[in-house]
Image 1 (tube, protein in one colour):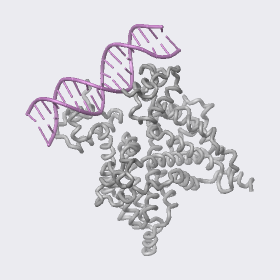
Image 2: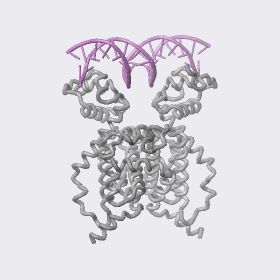
Image 3: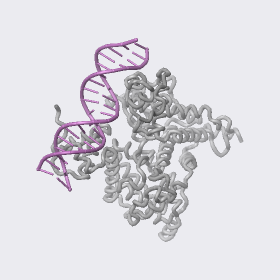
Image 4: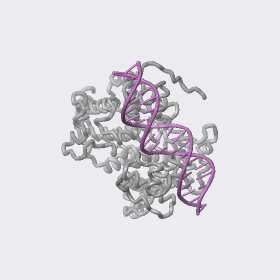
Length: 246
Length: 246
DNA sequence: ACCTGAACACCGTTCAAGT
DNA sequence: ACCTGAACACCGTTCAAGT
């Protein structure tokens, strides 16, 4: 009955068009709504037409990841906080500044497409590295290049990379967990549905969960990152640059 | 044709039996194989019989999370490395020892049921706290209780909790990402399918990815945890105990 | 080359009925 | 109370056909 969206967008199909429509659909109605048939309808096309661009449903999910990291990369290219313009401060080596910039770009895109996060977090578990979408490969190569330029040996670079991804991914997942039961309700306990929690069994849960909202997610992410990365060994080249700058 | 499993397990249905069968099915054949109809067949029952115990497919996924954390809690109860038997060392307060024990128990269960990890990582994003499975609530309450007993105020306890979950979850996800393309192949580059990566575009990726296997995942998890938690403020009661012990 | 349209196997879930 | 069985709407995907 209610005509949804604009089903008759007759511009010719292409992979970017299909992926953009998929992301838009997921943004609007959630992951569960992403269906070959539904997406085709949104594009004003028969379901089978999509198979020329997406390699089936699984491929479509990989497409979401592709679109996600393409947006991250785009944001890194055009970001106003350019890495290069920041002069390397004495307190912090350049590679750490850049890693933080990457983490922030990812966080931004998650914020723009929160419904896509589950796919981004979990899809890599079933896709071998060589088959990951190109924008993911590019971003990862970029991070490794930054670490190599800073003078880290392979083994240390890998440790830093793993730490970086683990922390960023974990933070983003935890941030988005704060689901509300009844958004209208002003009282936080009722809004979060906590009145259903037996207070006798879970006293601290009841007391602490409402305070989750007080947190500055982005600050937690960057602070924790600094804490983890400051534990990393010195990079010889950074030490060199620091000497040169002083 | 090939008769699968033991379809005629005629012992009466119950929620634990259904969930155990679900976990077993996912362990054997992956998440995609978990279907109301398939699970019913495994239990030798009509699909609709499951609805008395699981509240539909979504509820079944929550059931996986429930079974997961029930196993974690069970492991914590019976673990040989009991928290109480470790005398509080001068170097480390008791709450950190206990958090590490929890992280290790979770890691163990992930290792036992790797296919369940995606659900554990992502389901909380769509389930409000009050509706989370009981074992999850119990474990979370336990962690908060440990932190309160150590003397942390609410706000600090929450920070520590968030840090703890973010890091553990991120590590577990990163650990399980190392997908192989062709398990038989001895050469790591071929086994990981990296020969398909254009070496000109991704030189560092090609060089570094094979070295992922060298890592001791559990050590990375506990080391990073120590690094993050040692940044946390002092707990007044722990300071008290430390004075008392010396 | 690009898309349609019918068909198939499988899915979650409803409802009314059995015992 | 517990399970069955038929039915329905919707899904991903095949295949052959259109243009």
